[in-house]
Length: 123
Image (tube, rainbow, N blue to C red; front, top):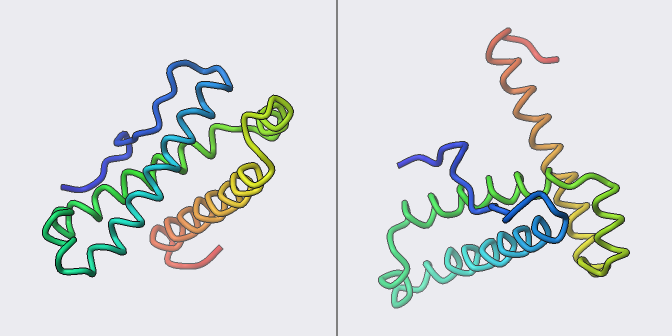
């Protein structure tokens, strides 16, 4: 089963900044959990408890999509407010900005790859 674009665990209660930040924290927690699970999968004892490789990879795809969706939902103004309201500490804010830059770079790469496939040449 392949991850669909709409598969996401980023589901804020509403569009309020606090709700979006809380939903982002949930996605980050799950990101850490799936990364730990993927690391533990190498251990034979844990591998039997964690599910199949395919299930873990599927979960990783959904979480990655969710994280990108969460990150891209915040504007610079949102991040400034989140910092002022202490919804994100300095480390979390820095991590968010790094992840936003990575997400934007990934989007640019996907766009370029799509263009190259369609037109047979680079941008």
